[in-house]
Image 1: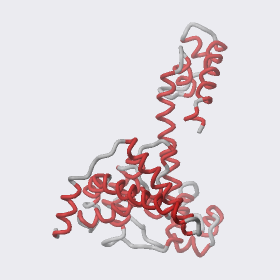
Image 2: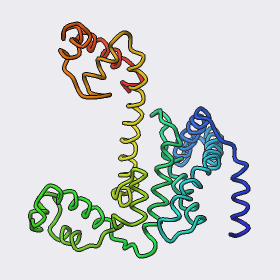
Image 3: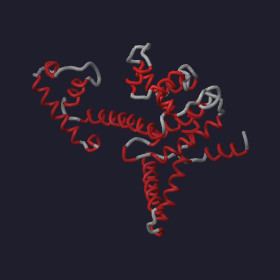
Image 4: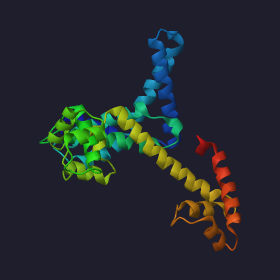
Length: 290
Protein backbone atom coordinates (compact mmCIF):
# COMPACT_ATOMS: atom_id res chain seq x y z
CA UNK A 1 0.00 0.00 0.00
CA UNK A 2 1.47 3.35 -1.04
CA UNK A 3 1.58 6.63 0.86
CA UNK A 4 -1.24 7.87 -1.39
CA UNK A 5 -3.41 4.96 -0.30
CA UNK A 6 -2.65 5.78 3.35
CA UNK A 7 -3.70 9.38 2.74
CA UNK A 8 -6.89 8.17 1.06
CA UNK A 9 -7.93 6.02 4.03
CA UNK A 10 -7.00 8.80 6.45
CA UNK A 11 -9.25 11.24 4.59
CA UNK A 12 -11.97 8.62 4.31
CA UNK A 13 -12.14 8.37 8.09
CA UNK A 14 -12.81 12.09 8.32
CA UNK A 15 -15.64 12.21 5.77
CA UNK A 16 -19.02 13.31 7.13
CA UNK A 17 -21.97 10.96 6.71
CA UNK A 18 -24.99 12.68 5.18
CA UNK A 19 -28.67 12.37 5.99
CA UNK A 20 -31.19 11.59 3.26
CA UNK A 21 -32.27 15.23 3.22
CA UNK A 22 -28.67 16.40 2.81
CA UNK A 23 -28.13 13.93 -0.04
CA UNK A 24 -31.23 15.25 -1.80
CA UNK A 25 -30.12 18.86 -1.34
CA UNK A 26 -26.72 18.09 -2.86
CA UNK A 27 -28.33 16.11 -5.70
CA UNK A 28 -30.50 19.11 -6.53
CA UNK A 29 -27.44 21.34 -6.73
CA UNK A 30 -25.64 18.78 -8.90
CA UNK A 31 -28.60 18.71 -11.30
CA UNK A 32 -28.85 22.51 -11.42
CA UNK A 33 -25.11 22.78 -11.99
CA UNK A 34 -25.18 20.23 -14.81
CA UNK A 35 -28.00 22.10 -16.54
CA UNK A 36 -26.14 25.39 -16.09
CA UNK A 37 -23.02 23.83 -17.62
CA UNK A 38 -25.05 22.71 -20.66
CA UNK A 39 -26.49 26.20 -21.09
CA UNK A 40 -23.05 27.73 -20.66
CA UNK A 41 -21.66 25.47 -23.37
CA UNK A 42 -24.54 26.54 -25.62
CA UNK A 43 -23.51 30.19 -25.29
CA UNK A 44 -25.90 31.50 -22.63
CA UNK A 45 -24.95 34.35 -20.28
CA UNK A 46 -21.82 33.20 -18.44
CA UNK A 47 -22.16 35.67 -15.57
CA UNK A 48 -25.43 34.20 -14.33
CA UNK A 49 -24.43 30.56 -14.82
CA UNK A 50 -20.84 30.32 -13.63
CA UNK A 51 -21.86 30.38 -9.97
CA UNK A 52 -24.38 27.58 -10.46
CA UNK A 53 -21.81 25.46 -12.29
CA UNK A 54 -19.29 25.89 -9.48
CA UNK A 55 -21.91 25.11 -6.82
CA UNK A 56 -22.84 21.96 -8.73
CA UNK A 57 -19.23 20.83 -8.93
CA UNK A 58 -18.77 21.43 -5.21
CA UNK A 59 -21.94 19.46 -4.40
CA UNK A 60 -20.82 16.63 -6.68
CA UNK A 61 -17.46 16.39 -4.93
CA UNK A 62 -19.19 16.42 -1.53
CA UNK A 63 -21.53 13.57 -2.54
CA UNK A 64 -18.64 11.46 -3.79
CA UNK A 65 -16.47 12.06 -0.74
CA UNK A 66 -19.30 11.46 1.74
CA UNK A 67 -20.28 8.13 0.17
CA UNK A 68 -16.81 6.61 -0.08
CA UNK A 69 -17.59 4.18 2.75
CA UNK A 70 -20.09 2.54 0.39
CA UNK A 71 -17.26 2.02 -2.09
CA UNK A 72 -14.96 0.46 0.51
CA UNK A 73 -17.75 -1.81 1.78
CA UNK A 74 -18.46 -3.28 -1.66
CA UNK A 75 -14.80 -3.30 -2.69
CA UNK A 76 -14.00 -5.46 0.34
CA UNK A 77 -16.63 -7.96 -0.79
CA UNK A 78 -15.57 -7.84 -4.41
CA UNK A 79 -11.82 -8.28 -3.92
CA UNK A 80 -12.19 -12.07 -3.55
CA UNK A 81 -14.02 -12.54 -6.86
CA UNK A 82 -11.15 -12.02 -9.25
CA UNK A 83 -7.55 -10.92 -9.58
CA UNK A 84 -7.98 -7.31 -8.45
CA UNK A 85 -6.83 -6.40 -4.94
CA UNK A 86 -8.68 -4.13 -2.52
CA UNK A 87 -7.15 -0.87 -3.75
CA UNK A 88 -7.95 -1.68 -7.39
CA UNK A 89 -11.50 -2.61 -6.41
CA UNK A 90 -11.84 0.71 -4.58
CA UNK A 91 -10.67 2.59 -7.66
CA UNK A 92 -13.27 0.78 -9.77
CA UNK A 93 -15.91 1.40 -7.12
CA UNK A 94 -15.19 5.12 -7.18
CA UNK A 95 -15.86 5.06 -10.91
CA UNK A 96 -19.25 3.46 -10.20
CA UNK A 97 -20.01 5.96 -7.43
CA UNK A 98 -19.23 8.84 -9.78
CA UNK A 99 -21.66 7.40 -12.32
CA UNK A 100 -24.31 7.17 -9.61
CA UNK A 101 -23.83 10.80 -8.57
CA UNK A 102 -24.10 12.00 -12.17
CA UNK A 103 -27.19 9.90 -12.95
CA UNK A 104 -29.14 10.03 -9.68
CA UNK A 105 -32.69 11.39 -10.04
CA UNK A 106 -33.73 12.66 -6.61
CA UNK A 107 -37.33 13.20 -7.76
CA UNK A 108 -37.99 9.44 -7.77
CA UNK A 109 -37.94 9.31 -3.98
CA UNK A 110 -35.51 6.50 -3.19
CA UNK A 111 -32.32 6.94 -1.19
CA UNK A 112 -29.08 7.75 -2.95
CA UNK A 113 -27.25 4.96 -1.10
CA UNK A 114 -29.75 2.40 -2.43
CA UNK A 115 -29.17 3.66 -5.97
CA UNK A 116 -25.40 4.07 -5.69
CA UNK A 117 -24.66 0.60 -4.34
CA UNK A 118 -25.81 -0.97 -7.63
CA UNK A 119 -23.49 1.20 -9.72
CA UNK A 120 -20.61 0.46 -7.32
CA UNK A 121 -21.28 -3.29 -7.42
CA UNK A 122 -21.55 -3.21 -11.19
CA UNK A 123 -18.23 -1.40 -11.57
CA UNK A 124 -16.36 -3.71 -9.17
CA UNK A 125 -17.87 -6.94 -10.49
CA UNK A 126 -17.34 -5.95 -14.12
CA UNK A 127 -13.70 -5.13 -13.42
CA UNK A 128 -13.17 -8.49 -11.71
CA UNK A 129 -14.95 -10.27 -14.54
CA UNK A 130 -12.62 -8.61 -17.05
CA UNK A 131 -9.44 -9.82 -15.34
CA UNK A 132 -7.74 -13.18 -15.05
CA UNK A 133 -8.96 -16.03 -17.22
CA UNK A 134 -12.37 -14.52 -18.02
CA UNK A 135 -12.80 -14.15 -21.78
CA UNK A 136 -14.07 -10.83 -23.11
CA UNK A 137 -16.35 -10.77 -26.12
CA UNK A 138 -17.57 -8.02 -28.45
CA UNK A 139 -20.66 -6.23 -27.17
CA UNK A 140 -22.78 -7.55 -30.06
CA UNK A 141 -21.85 -11.13 -29.21
CA UNK A 142 -22.49 -10.46 -25.51
CA UNK A 143 -26.00 -9.23 -26.24
CA UNK A 144 -26.66 -11.97 -28.78
CA UNK A 145 -25.57 -14.65 -26.32
CA UNK A 146 -28.01 -13.38 -23.70
CA UNK A 147 -30.90 -13.41 -26.19
CA UNK A 148 -29.99 -16.87 -27.45
CA UNK A 149 -29.70 -18.19 -23.89
CA UNK A 150 -33.12 -16.76 -23.06
CA UNK A 151 -34.67 -18.26 -26.20
CA UNK A 152 -33.09 -21.66 -25.58
CA UNK A 153 -34.96 -21.96 -22.29
CA UNK A 154 -38.28 -22.06 -24.12
CA UNK A 155 -37.31 -24.10 -27.19
CA UNK A 156 -35.78 -27.51 -27.79
CA UNK A 157 -32.03 -27.56 -27.18
CA UNK A 158 -31.57 -29.27 -30.55
CA UNK A 159 -33.18 -26.41 -32.47
CA UNK A 160 -31.20 -25.26 -35.45
CA UNK A 161 -29.45 -21.93 -35.84
CA UNK A 162 -32.23 -20.83 -38.20
CA UNK A 163 -34.93 -21.57 -35.61
CA UNK A 164 -33.02 -19.76 -32.87
CA UNK A 165 -32.47 -16.83 -35.22
CA UNK A 166 -36.21 -16.67 -35.84
CA UNK A 167 -36.93 -16.82 -32.10
CA UNK A 168 -34.46 -14.05 -31.26
CA UNK A 169 -34.72 -11.89 -34.38
CA UNK A 170 -30.94 -12.09 -34.83
CA UNK A 171 -29.02 -12.87 -38.04
CA UNK A 172 -27.88 -16.49 -38.42
CA UNK A 173 -24.19 -15.53 -38.27
CA UNK A 174 -24.67 -13.71 -34.95
CA UNK A 175 -26.52 -16.69 -33.46
CA UNK A 176 -23.66 -18.94 -34.60
CA UNK A 177 -21.13 -16.61 -32.95
CA UNK A 178 -23.15 -16.58 -29.73
CA UNK A 179 -23.43 -20.38 -29.65
CA UNK A 180 -19.73 -20.81 -30.38
CA UNK A 181 -18.58 -18.31 -27.76
CA UNK A 182 -17.51 -19.44 -24.29
CA UNK A 183 -19.33 -18.16 -21.24
CA UNK A 184 -18.59 -14.50 -20.61
CA UNK A 185 -18.52 -15.25 -16.89
CA UNK A 186 -18.91 -18.91 -15.82
CA UNK A 187 -22.08 -19.38 -13.80
CA UNK A 188 -20.17 -21.08 -10.98
CA UNK A 189 -17.31 -18.58 -10.86
CA UNK A 190 -16.72 -16.59 -7.65
CA UNK A 191 -17.72 -13.44 -9.52
CA UNK A 192 -21.11 -14.75 -10.60
CA UNK A 193 -21.81 -16.56 -7.32
CA UNK A 194 -21.16 -13.37 -5.37
CA UNK A 195 -23.19 -11.31 -7.81
CA UNK A 196 -26.10 -13.74 -7.55
CA UNK A 197 -26.06 -13.33 -3.78
CA UNK A 198 -26.38 -9.57 -4.30
CA UNK A 199 -29.29 -9.91 -6.72
CA UNK A 200 -27.28 -9.27 -9.90
CA UNK A 201 -27.41 -11.32 -13.07
CA UNK A 202 -25.36 -11.97 -16.18
CA UNK A 203 -27.19 -9.12 -17.89
CA UNK A 204 -25.74 -6.72 -15.32
CA UNK A 205 -22.23 -7.55 -16.52
CA UNK A 206 -22.72 -7.12 -20.24
CA UNK A 207 -25.47 -4.52 -20.63
CA UNK A 208 -24.36 -1.09 -21.77
CA UNK A 209 -24.69 1.68 -19.20
CA UNK A 210 -27.99 3.03 -20.55
CA UNK A 211 -29.50 -0.45 -20.53
CA UNK A 212 -28.34 -1.04 -16.97
CA UNK A 213 -29.74 2.34 -15.96
CA UNK A 214 -33.19 1.42 -17.32
CA UNK A 215 -33.05 -1.97 -15.59
CA UNK A 216 -31.93 -0.41 -12.31
CA UNK A 217 -34.45 2.43 -12.29
CA UNK A 218 -37.27 -0.01 -13.04
CA UNK A 219 -36.17 -2.22 -10.15
CA UNK A 220 -35.80 0.66 -7.69
CA UNK A 221 -39.12 2.14 -8.78
CA UNK A 222 -40.80 -1.20 -8.02
CA UNK A 223 -39.12 -1.43 -4.61
CA UNK A 224 -39.97 2.18 -3.79
CA UNK A 225 -43.59 1.75 -4.88
CA UNK A 226 -43.87 -1.47 -2.85
CA UNK A 227 -42.65 0.39 0.22
CA UNK A 228 -45.11 3.22 -0.36
CA UNK A 229 -47.99 0.79 -0.82
CA UNK A 230 -47.08 -1.04 2.38
CA UNK A 231 -47.12 2.24 4.27
CA UNK A 232 -50.31 3.56 2.65
CA UNK A 233 -52.24 0.31 3.07
CA UNK A 234 -51.57 0.49 6.78
CA UNK A 235 -53.01 4.00 6.87
CA UNK A 236 -56.29 3.21 5.10
CA UNK A 237 -59.37 3.50 7.34
CA UNK A 238 -61.32 0.53 8.64
CA UNK A 239 -60.92 -2.76 6.81
CA UNK A 240 -59.91 -1.26 3.46
CA UNK A 241 -56.22 -2.12 3.80
CA UNK A 242 -56.75 -5.73 4.86
CA UNK A 243 -59.37 -6.28 2.14
CA UNK A 244 -57.02 -5.02 -0.59
CA UNK A 245 -54.21 -7.20 0.79
CA UNK A 246 -56.42 -10.28 0.73
CA UNK A 247 -57.88 -9.55 -2.71
CA UNK A 248 -54.44 -9.17 -4.33
CA UNK A 249 -52.76 -11.86 -2.21
CA UNK A 250 -50.17 -9.48 -0.77
CA UNK A 251 -49.71 -11.22 2.59
CA UNK A 252 -51.04 -14.65 1.71
CA UNK A 253 -53.22 -16.55 -0.75
CA UNK A 254 -55.40 -14.49 -3.06
CA UNK A 255 -59.09 -14.51 -2.08
CA UNK A 256 -62.32 -13.52 -3.79
CA UNK A 257 -64.47 -10.65 -2.56
CA UNK A 258 -67.10 -13.15 -1.48
CA UNK A 259 -64.58 -15.08 0.63
CA UNK A 260 -63.27 -11.86 2.15
CA UNK A 261 -66.76 -10.61 2.96
CA UNK A 262 -67.80 -13.90 4.57
CA UNK A 263 -64.65 -13.97 6.70
CA UNK A 264 -65.76 -10.63 8.16
CA UNK A 265 -69.37 -11.73 8.55
CA UNK A 266 -70.61 -9.68 5.60
CA UNK A 267 -71.27 -10.11 1.87
CA UNK A 268 -69.03 -9.86 -1.16
CA UNK A 269 -70.71 -6.57 -2.04
CA UNK A 270 -69.59 -5.14 1.30
CA UNK A 271 -66.00 -6.22 0.63
CA UNK A 272 -66.16 -4.84 -2.91
CA UNK A 273 -67.33 -1.45 -1.70
CA UNK A 274 -64.48 -1.19 0.80
CA UNK A 275 -61.99 -2.35 -1.82
CA UNK A 276 -63.14 0.31 -4.30
CA UNK A 277 -62.98 3.05 -1.67
CA UNK A 278 -59.49 1.98 -0.62
CA UNK A 279 -58.24 1.77 -4.21
CA UNK A 280 -59.64 5.24 -4.88
CA UNK A 281 -57.70 6.60 -1.91
CA UNK A 282 -54.50 4.96 -3.15
CA UNK A 283 -55.02 6.27 -6.69
CA UNK A 284 -55.47 9.79 -5.33
CA UNK A 285 -52.19 9.62 -3.38
CA UNK A 286 -49.73 11.94 -5.25
CA UNK A 287 -46.69 9.81 -4.36
CA UNK A 288 -48.24 6.63 -5.77
CA UNK A 289 -49.91 8.29 -8.75
CA UNK A 290 -46.55 9.77 -9.77
